[in-house]
Image (cartoon, rainbow, N blue to C red):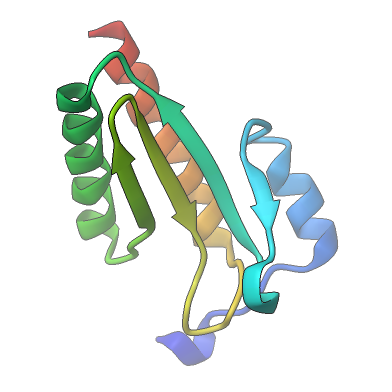
Length: 106
């Protein structure tokens, strides 16, 4: 499977980024990744959101880096096997945003 996964082009990054405008693209160690920090009223809610992101990741078989702290959850999506971003990373960032919106509405 990893052999069929390809990095997105710079043009694709620019196009896909329009769908997730709040996310930033960082490039630590030369590997592009999508990152965003979600804010919460307390640790319990942040932890519940972390678990929801974990469920999304398990369902897709694609896992982010997550940092859960009091009042915030930092999420980073990228594909380790290719050392950068693929289409699925942008899809998962959008799904993470959708999960956050659902948390805000509940």
